[in-house]
Length: 294
View (cartoon, rainbow, N blue to C red):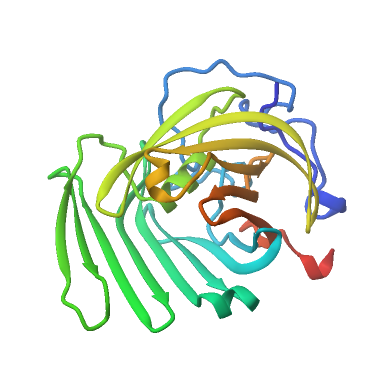
């Protein structure tokens, strides 16, 4: 059984591997923890508590990831993700996506997504989520404001630059609801993950609340453009996937260490197979790597 111990960096890059982490849940990859209730009791250990940065699970502030996205095996787009800490226990996550090459001749896409919220006991709790989407000359803009006291999300949407904003109220009952970006960073920070464990997270996108069901898989060595990484898998099933153009689960491979960096993501879409491969990273802990260095 694979658990997330301290794993070596590829090709000797980064800090030297250690046998065990000083915190008890960073055991060797062959150890196993007893799973308790499905809780979000640990998000980023040390946020506001002074715990050493290298002991944190998941993304560290300043982490920057870059990807090449392949469609049907050919390079089709680039993407980047970055997370920063703000005053108090606030965070900002931003991701960008742009088509390139022949794919851009078919359809020019330039998207920017930004999530802002707070680290809380229950996880990465979104306060705002903004989507700026460009399709050639067409510009779409959507903003979500999470009103947790009223248990609702206020959505403002403009389908084109010259059209008025449309306002929608989306009610929710579950306290741990968030946006898709924050959900990704939250799952990376879960303290206890075991193979075959199934977890659920509620997110808001479009005009609805829907569930992401995640199943933790086993470990392996994965060859990537940046070298070989010890990884574990995370399979994500999107509720009503057929309506969102998914033809199967989304498969993520994350580094089998305390950073849990997504090094590869694969999705079966109605337009074909799409694979995102990590091509550069700065992990916010003083380590970086790019394809050019490999």
